[in-house]
Length: 220
Image (tube, rainbow, N blue to C red; front, top):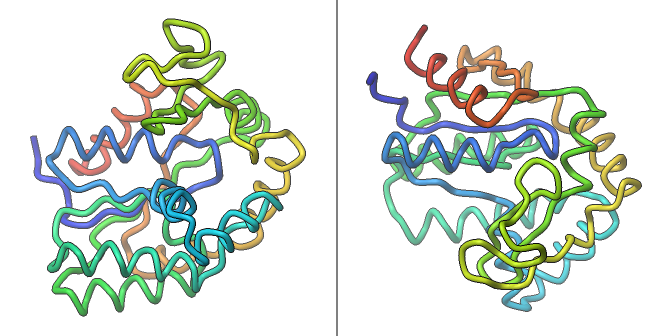
């Protein structure tokens, strides 16, 4: 198997499967997976002032502010030193964040090698988003239709209770998709100009999309 680039960004609309694919790629290629969504939820769970600000934004159907997500990312990078073999999921979401990411990586001896844009139609995304279930103990995710738990309402991994996230109503998700189209679409041009962008069809099965990603990284 051809070695994957050192540092990879996954971005795309909510519900497209960035987290699943980033986690799978990390496992297949021995890379470190950094999920901004998980990091933000961790900040909320700690009950910090920053976490409260993030929670309020998410419940309104908005993204966390640039300042908030950058503070969370810097915490992670400062713990781990030089940056190689990193898969970033859910970050950056704006051109300003992308520019800051380049700076942070360079300061720590790394650089961005490939950006994978996963995309799908809005109706496909809404169907995925409104059926998600989250384990309250280990944060593992399931789906009522696409990935149901073996025992209704209970996590397959730890046996914890599954719950629908507060921000997974159809109204909130439509707002999130609109916000994405407005704020994140410009990233396409930013990364295309740098010659690192690859667009992946995220509407297929997890296995099919993973195959597309591996072929892209292998240069096929």
